[in-house]
Length: 196
Image 1 (cartoon, rainbow, N blue to C red):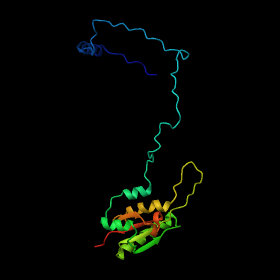
Image 2: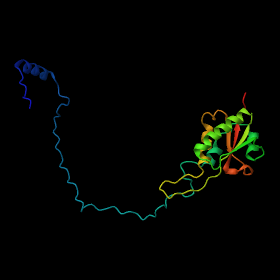
Image 3: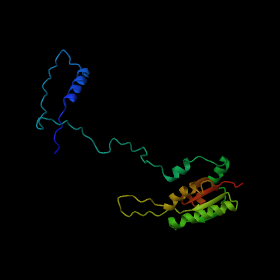
């Protein structure tokens, strides 16, 4: 244990000079305020619970409103701005335009489908195609019973993301679900940019 240090006479004199020059931060007021005695906290037996009004679980919820945080894939694609000619887009949505090439990813795994899609789009651009059809399938409903719901149609959800990313993002002008005659929700029309 360290012994206390003794203050020398010079240090004590210096301290007294400094202490005389200081002013208190708060000057004491002339009136002394008496502290009112604090009421003791009530005992738990003295506290009366507030009555709870009658209610029914879920009664206040507006069931007409759509409470999904994320719009469905179809809603997201339909909400995307139209990049191509409006007249051609209308004909495309009605199934009046015929795809110049198609690729069927149905039944492939994600690892197999991604390089196949990338190669197909690059070859289609090289061949000068403008409209191609990418078939993904609608997907199977597979619920393994776990606590986290599984998304069905993995390729159906992945393909629009792959088409928006490099190296394909700069080549693709428009993506939309195909008309029922070309596969409906199980396929996408991919409208490619014109190569210069």
